[in-house]
Image (tube, rainbow, N blue to C red; front, side, top):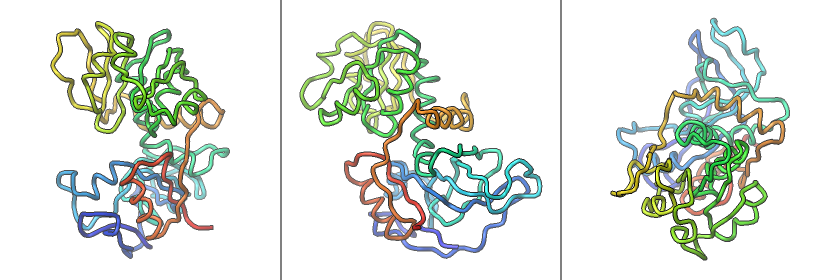
Length: 306
């Protein structure tokens, strides 16, 4: 079996093909043949050596959709051939071993690429809206980073709950965000959101890279508003704010989040934007990480060649 990883940190060129022994599931695991892998910014950060205690050599990756090809002796509800999705480890490979209780069945009308694009971005967006921000109908919800892989899902999920959604993004994304249901787009490259949206947000959600510019979040928030951000803290303020740092949590399980996201996507109540389909080869992963290193539009999906 071939996998794709690296023995040292650095740019995309550190990737190499790594031949691995055949996978054998434990009693509560399954082995899946990889049908699609989603590349995330966390994979790029890990490749650069910025994640503490990352072991080397490493086969990276977390988001995978595949077809069940082996099952452990205790697994009775996932027949061979079932398509499943999972958030797991070491997914840059032709086959992946998965704990059976973390696998979510993929609806028949979803492609592997569509399904895999919802794993990390979708789980993050769902938990942000339903748990950290606790969005309610009628609230004014301001989403910063609204055109990103997580942000575009956040605006759709908040809109479905009946919120009045205002998106912050560059002007070139305005039309696509309006099509997703937002009531207003403030283009940060044309206007200062802190002035345009001063004291308007019942909820401010910041899923821009690193939760940049907390001062603007504070300026846009009403007194006693909630700010949910991928940043770990807010700047000092005298404003009364309820702050939630977005982080991994089991308050809502990944499986429950994915099941709901798949239901919404399969019934046309949610959309996902795939920008790149790349081959499940060494060249494909190198190209995918080169894209991760630059501004890009849409999810980066790696799939086996037909």
